[in-house]
Length: 137
Length: 137
Length: 137
Length: 137
Image (cartoon, rainbow over all chains, first blue to last red; front, side, top):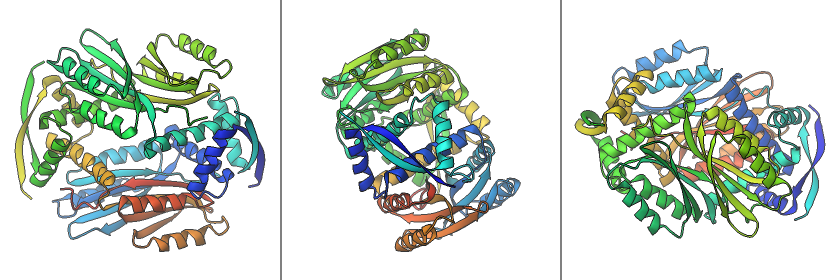
């Protein structure tokens, strides 16, 4: 996809602050920083508008909790169209970190998260919202 | 403060999505949209870096709760260097919405919010983070 | 409204951590802490479900920006059914902090915020979500 | 770890709203709901207090971007003490979803995220904050 060049006007002191911020964050160019702002706002819009998205669900649990493993596996299988794959980390003797890569409509992903949260014995459920990238140049 | 004109390069289809977003939100120009992204990130930085900030704390409570009004007033007076003024709304016979305009270092504002949250009878405490504007062109 | 007493079971070490947290935050009782958790989740639900809510919108701007004051006032008048009152703070020679107390349906409040954000010259717009309290014991 | 039973008092109508919310979310018991609130606040505290945490970083990128893959791999190797493992999903012909399981001090994880964000060609970076579970019964 071709690059397009265009110009914008900013208050001089705002531009100076922007440049200082970019340098601090080791962002290589103004164009990259502006592109990142735009992409971030587009991903937020994808989740609000209900388009297909992707992301990761983080689960932490003690695998000794009675019946939890079985229920967790069953629930993931019922949602197999949403789940791409699962990464399992043995944090210590008791604790598991499970990271579920997901892809689908936001409402379906949120419904699955709701069902996960209702499971007894899960210590923590969190979500990192991402994108399928296709609509995000 | 003078305006400065400079150019940036974006992937063409990203620019098209940006323009569509701007039109949807009735944002008048690309320059305004980019400036808004930058200012938002600068206000977030002000709060993280501990510079002087400003904002509003929203409280909701039932003024019949015993001793709450007295404690709330006392606490606000002890923090009088942080509080600019208070706006009080009678939501109905029982409920009050109180909006406290604040200005000061983030850590001091956060400490005051912590003390407010410890008051028995407050139904809700929320914060809108703003800026004193001086460092924000 | 009468108080109701009921009991819950927690893992002993979770309860110890809870008690330590409460002490740190000077929260007077476990009942108050649990009530605060519940109320916070109910206010979030009110905003999602579209019931009547209340809150505060924080605006920061330079009143010298041409035509901004007039547009801001016009826009607030057009939304007068949403706006209860406005608190204006002169931050310095140039900068204003304006805090708008609002009450209404979340979608109407969000539409007004969108229109505010489209105004040229506003430095910052933020929202503190609250509640009208009536459905929140 | 043994369960402990204790009682709390809530306003009757607040308890009714709580029970309705629990039923809606198919949460099996009040004890589970209260435990979840407490655990969530403890995980937030772990991140603020700088204790060891765990989580997942989600990256979306086009693997055709020149030199991106090499830089991404190099950066991950430099942070190998933070990274447990990486899950890679081929979203389509161009787009990759990469999910990096991390474990370490919050400040080190945040520094790595900052370096990731500075890479040209990454479309999206997001984080799901979790816990190592050990301090979270």
